[in-house]
Image (cartoon, rainbow, N blue to C red; front, side, top):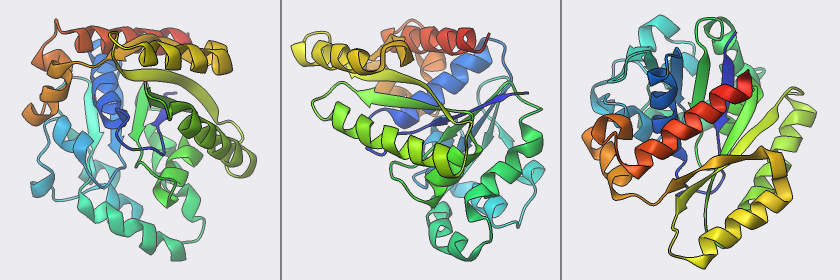
Length: 254
């Protein structure tokens, strides 16, 4: 049975979608069967994996509304072993429409009941806010992976997210655990990046990944080409960092 991992941070601009795209790709390239769910209405994970979000016939929105089956929505990507449940801007409407649904917090969980037996990993790219979509993702997940930008306000955002995870665990999903924190946009030229890393490690200890994602031009260029970093520039520091992170995630499951 596969592990369901939400990639989540209530703060935007922390490398959440970049991590969803590249960790998914690296897990798939390591021989794992992976499904990525784009649960963010911005749909950047969809386009970042080579799928044109403007020409989609069916999306995650249709799944949530009960209007399509999974096999009608799921699509292949530019990476072997990696499938995608794509989205587009329509998903933004789901937050309002789901209010009237019974058991609305568990709709995604119901969709994934059978899928988790078909994949080694299911990764969910959550929106950068605590809304009904994020709650659905966390209620369906085994663990939460938190990307944190190496900046001054990182700890403040982390404490808010940890509180949210505890609320979900208490009320909706007792098995939910912290997969780990991964540092992103690390700049070795600044003291601040190193200070943030050390401070978060002091708070979380074993739940911090050794792999650190650096600020990397090639990493920021890859999405505009619709490919993960390992296909855009396999020898870049960004590629090496995400390959290392994937290996840590795999090792943690053993």
